[in-house]
Length: 259
Image (tube, rainbow, N blue to C red):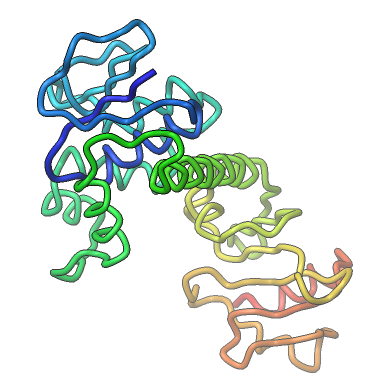
């Protein structure tokens, strides 16, 4: 089995596409070519060939409506990954299909004029390769890299779902989100854009929760609960407090902190 992709200068899209495929088919060889040879029925083609069939051919360059090749590959071989909502994938796809200028405009960011040196070094290594075979050090690295990347995407998919299912309620007309696990706050903000406070288990203090102000909401200051609500910790700038996970205590803290 051979995985074909384009030769010449490598990009994040073709590198990740191949790494994801190698995590699924670690026995495959990788051939970087300028033109496709005659293919066997087992071969897979990514980011070259001007064709996408969702089975063996995963190019996007012929259709501006298609996402990057790595997204096409993931949709086929790892359908459990939420390719529509994982932000890292959306960024990678936009960068490859829209280019750096339009992508930065779309995301409202300004990147430095130089590339990430880790990414650049990695892509330089991939660019220099013509054939990558099982047993080669770089082949083994790409297999493990692909596994790690897929695991990250699965974890992010799980976090998206956890955030969607989180409990929501209001206090003084502010939206509060309570979640039973610690996940990065960005997932909660994406699922609940108007959230003002997040409640989640405190990782340091047993049977306690963290009350976290989101984006420095002007109505929330946990310094207001000092001396009024028992607390394990209150941050000096008032963005967070740690209290026991007693609902009555939590409610009191929220009502005092919000003005």
